[in-house]
Image 1 (cartoon, one colour):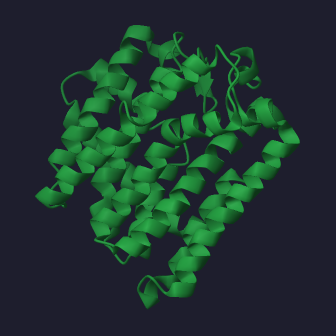
Image 2 (spheres, rainbow, N blue to C red; image 1 turned 180 degrees about the vertical axis):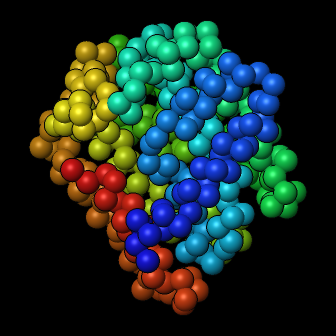
Length: 300
């Protein structure tokens, strides 16, 4: 099995679930539902939900039991994009090749759509029928930490404050471990938790997720420099205009590329160690290929 086959098997079902859950959360307010759906169902690779499912599958768990945490994660990721694009933060007009939410619906509705996605994420987890009570409590706590003032929000705040000064590469890594890496690490944690994976497997997968999250941000920074708008779906060279600290601005483009390749090799090493140890069911070993191919998303 490869990543394309895995994606084909699960993502159509997941998108149906995602839209159905959106309807369950906001059945009465049509304008709010429309604004939420515009961003939630507006494309994207669904990397974070896929990572939940791939981790679950590798650990021998039931992928369908990962739908609720994966949907909650995608709700929160989408809310963060809506708010990031607002004029007060990144002031982006386009995302994924389409106008951003506030450009279509206005700033007030975009803010409320983001707020609604954030709060609905936890409602969805709490009411899931496929998770035990202990799993729900743990997932809610993990997601709140990953998304909140000790995770994504902290990283976003650090990023904004960093525009006023020059960061070291170590400081930038700390920013992005929270801003980008926290939700990616939650995806792996959720998969391990739902599958009831053993601590050794979970630890190796967490190390993989840390490298993947770091690589994802370096890749994102490089896209703004080396790709064009047709490839990125949004305005390029925007980071420089906003005076943001990025890997290319600190290291230079060539050194940032080398750093990305080092991160990818380290992530591959985590998976190779798991494969060598046989730390998952024998009939699931081919599914490690799926996780290896996640790294293709961050290659340039």
